[in-house]
Length: 375
Image (tube, rainbow, N blue to C red):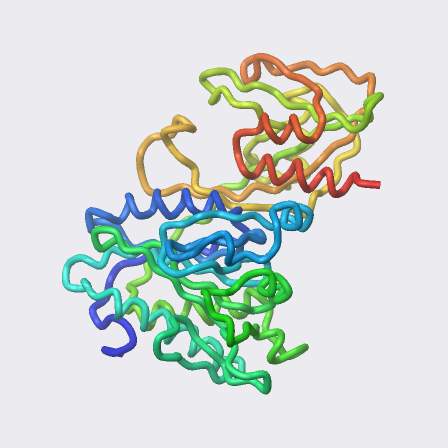
């Protein structure tokens, strides 16, 4: 273990967050780095899955992406610059992303041990499913020898600031490998990319099965003393829309100053015993007075709840998982605002609604609704 990770136990919490939009993930990392920096709090290991995104490390350029912005926008792929090392890489559905937000002070000042521990966890995870992966000197991550040559199964990129580690690993379970062909992954032109699915076919594990294995091995290789983790709170959002004379129109509402002063759709927390559907119907009626046909959007995402914005007391990190719905209402239906929450409303098209929305979850919901309603 001395060569592959740490040997002294360190308190840590592993948070399994499911789908996290990339910009929300960046905000999470920054907040968790602040949380662990004085050494009195447990390290935070975030296990999640991102929307399709290309991330540019400090050594990357836009030329490492071989398609233009319009091509990517049509396919729902975002591009973000980051402060991690390395060049361009891809995150997307079917990939396990792990952000080990670790404080390496107090005898663990060795980023090499962290890197080797994360690589070893990926190697052991692959072995759990019958795949032989290994390190490749000079190329961070883990690799598999295939009939096509060496292919990367797991990528690694760490950022270190005053011995606080952020960013981490991306382990391929079943991502869309075609997306990797649109970039020069990690600046490597003579080696490919693989996944457990491409290697094992129908015998490949599910994302959850692989994540169970991977986070267990990370706990071992980083010598983590795991602490209990409260479940995220749960909320809903519901985009309300109607068929207007010039196309679909979305209802957006301006929250009162004490509620944040931003434009949003209907949102609200689940009450005890409520299903997400029940909460959506209740919140729609309370906030807008509207009834209609409620439909799921097949979109749920998790995020860190910033206490300074939401008016919450300081304390341990709070996370929330939001389930998204949409509801069509009659074109002539009258909006009855809950004035204790919102001061005004407007009906607008997709682009205006997306521009007005503050949070990435709301913007993603607008894009998803436009796709769902496209002819």
